[in-house]
Image (cartoon, rainbow, N blue to C red; front, side, top):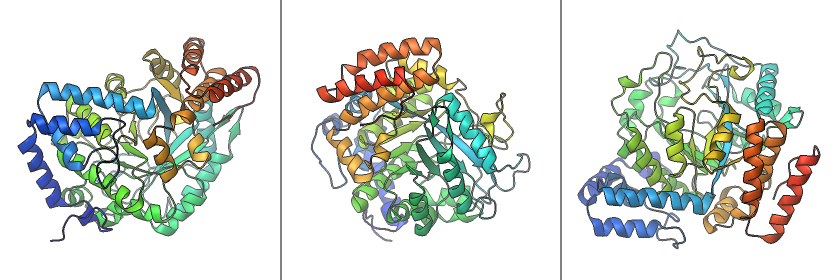
Amino acid sequence: MAEYNAKSMKAEEFIHHEEILATLAYADEHKRDVELLEKILEKAKPGKEMKNDHGIGLTHREASVLLACDLPEINEKIFALAKEIKETYYGNRIVMFAPLYLSNYCVNGCVYCPYHLKNKDIPRKKLTQEEVRAEVIALQDMGHKRLAIEAGEDPVNNPLEYILECIKTIYSVHHKNGDIRRVNVNIAATTVEDYRKLKEAGIGTYILFQETYHKESYEELHPTGPKHNYAYHTEAMDRAMEGGIDDVGLGVLFGLEMYRYEFAGLLMHAEHLEAVHGVGPHTISVPRIKPASDIDPEDFDNSISDEIFAKLVACIRLAVPYTGMIISTRESEEVREKLLNLGISQISGGSRTSVGGYTTEERPTDTEQFDVSDQRTLDEVVAWLMENGHIPSFCTACYREGRTGDRFMSLCKSGQIVNCCQPNALMTLAEYLVDYGSEKTKKLGFAMIEKELESIPNEKARALAKEHIEEIKSSNRRDFRF
């Protein structure tokens, strides 16, 4: 049996089963060791210098001890520190995005996904380029600037050439004052050559959910199709990096396997990317399994409560403080509100998880990948965020200014990113308010902008942001950025 090695390029060595089991045993042994728990919390505090080989934050073993802890007074400190870390690195900004489903054709047999090949109840659909254009216009009319495109794995119906054509179409649509400025891509694991083509197409983040890091469970949950290959899937981020994509997004589908196992595996993957490439995950997503066509979450016996879910988010934030954390409309308004204070920095709004869902007035459910719990409009979500003290940000500046990969990470880890992010967030919020906001949202938004402008630390940046916001209000000039 090969040893655990974070720098190995082999999946079973950097996601090492025996190391995870040893980590869980260590966590159980020390979960009430107050001295150790306090020491770990001290290490996680923002502003501490790097203490391990994989960058700032905590190791998978340290963070697993915190996750296992059942002492109320320590858990309170974990939640408080998660909030502090989130505010240190990301302030009160929340980045907005929407998923865009291109095709639900899929050749895989994933037992938790309604797109699986044997599901005959779901109508199969693939957008034409004209339909892609119509969906993009509908999303622009809502106010979105950032999309995450999704498609099943099907070499015949969804070849890479189709994905590339869709990306080109999305970027080409300029409707009124609307533009999609960043396209993130969530498609199946592929080759270095294909990742190079995606990079050349101008994608933002390449997202790929592991689903589960437990190899035996992974193979059982993916019985047929190319996704059955655990190593090829798990090593995809290394190929993406080799292909020039330096912003990658990790995630597991909580509920498929024991959550503590997944948590350790997820952090080991982040440590591996840091150790090999010097760049950890740009984002980490935390979806939970939800009802869908032909899928009943109760078929999976590892579901997690809202309380455990909140603890997971908080512990990920402590372990990987620099990463963007994403919560989707799978979760209810109540759950999302709680998690925003524990580490989440990106959320979707007005989402539809069906192919062609944005161009119909009624929400179509026959091609949905999962039930949407939070069905509010984007404007309602924007207003809700501001009422809770968060700045909705439609910013895409870092990606378009070349602040990606290690350049973004160094700015984020040093805390310097605030000098770009705060003015960019407020300017893009002003765009949204002028072009798309309801009267209620405008009133909330411009009051927030006036207040938050004063928190920009750099005097010149503050003055310039004020100037640009006045231009946005008085003209059709858009897309100012720091």
